[in-house]
Length: 414
Ligand code: FES
Ligand SMILES: [Fe+2]
Image 1 (cartoon, protein in one colour):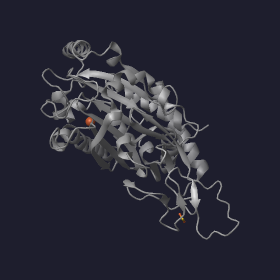
Image 2 (image 1 turned 45 degrees about the vertical axis):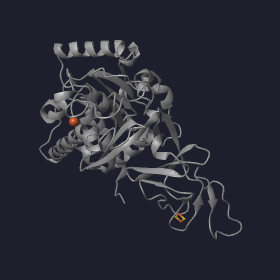
Image 3 (image 1 turned 180 degrees about the vertical axis):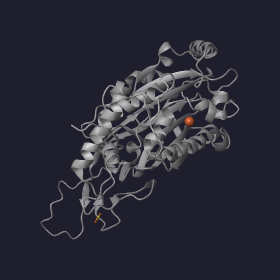
Image 4 (image 1 turned 135 degrees about the vertical axis):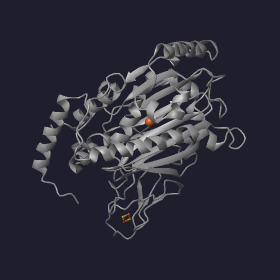
């Protein structure tokens, strides 16, 4: 499929990586958004070695419930078996490789390949291969098992069998995350935003709020994140006080944790937490700032804050006392990506009674559509022959600089 002169591609990549490492505060050369060699390397060295959000436990409530999603050309299958274990598997048949589960969500009794009907158990074990002859050896033909872990009801997968443990890496953010009781939540809405742009542009856009004031009017009316001033400091202090006195949460609920990218505890295990204030009078991340769903978990009121989390390098959470949003940024091709956004509410909240989907999703649907446009224009500008890497803000884009360092190191050719 790819017509590489491997040696030539490798030395060009080496040269470009060194060039970029020499000025890590600058945006990347166009080469990193256009090279097939680099893209394949990113998939192998970064995405298939990172912990990635797959779905929420409520989506796999019963035995046989499954979900699938794609990382580049790979399809990942996550399924609940009859013993209540969750398995992450490569969704590719061990006979001749056909994709087994074709839908994004579904229920099945067994995993049966639609091509020649090989049958696998819900844990990926090969049970039956028709007419393969008497001497056929079933062993060693199970679906490839991937690593899988559950954090507060969120399912994460990692395609690297040697991957470090995300569970222990996430311990530090648990005091801030646990009060939402996400394991007792449900998916109220899930939307996919396909973008004709490289995955790094979709992620990098999320990592900074330098663009928030000019690009996100609705967001900026409610959230203080894009401001860096004395006024915001005061709002943050008041929010922390309310979390303590009105909600009864300890200091660790608002304590920041920053172990992202080049600071992450182990490769692919980015974890972070930052709680920041909303503007005075705003309770939650809705367009008018007023409650849009029942309070989650241990919350007994509103502290006027929002929790910003990262779990794994390409998945993030934005939590309000009444709802939480999960973001995932993945490549489908060099300049084709998907942003998936999931809205979680308390599990017994009833649609139409306790919340309206349109009102619940408005803030982040509007903001993500705005992001779609700016990311697309970013890719178009980078594709221009006259594009040259530019300097990034060390005030607002430090996380992007951090990401670039980590990214370049992971690509390095040993
Ligand atoms: S490819 Fe799956 S049974 Fe043949
Ligand atoms: Fe944005």
